[in-house]
Length: 222
Figure 1 (cartoon, rainbow, N blue to C red):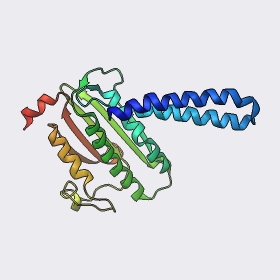
Figure 2: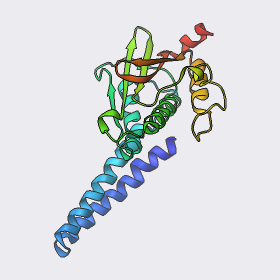
Figure 3: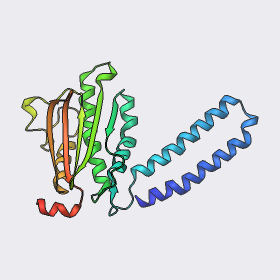
Figure 4: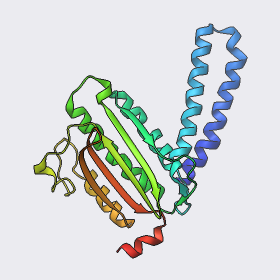
């Protein structure tokens, strides 16, 4: 991860700067619409490079604020959700500077798994109204714990499946049946847990994870 982050910031960053310089040199010799298209593409590359820096937290022992995790979640999933006309909103205190001492990439993957499941549930509804295709994430640090709720307007979980969804291999889609099983176990490994609420606040399914912000606290939860 550290190598990828440094390579992206340095080598790719330099390449983008070189391309920008070349465009400035030749823009008077090419059609204006082509020049603008090239500039827009370079701007998009530069933005994507910045986003990569948000996703990659190269030092696994370095703590991070909640805002960094939420920014990374947005960057990680927004293109995939937008392709299916699914909106995502993240609610958290941008000014909360308390640090989370947990594995960043593990938490990012955990949230990604929950969002992928929410996306599948929404697509299963087969609705065309974009206002009905929503994912909302509420994240807060309360005392010494972080609580994150992933809410969706999908098809929901029927009663008969409630006691099965965290079992290895169980799936109602073409998936592997590993995502929620893995999410539950990851929560336990970092001293937390994963719960479900249904049909609440206008959302069909809410997955709630909580974990101590200090990884030393997980020992007291064992």
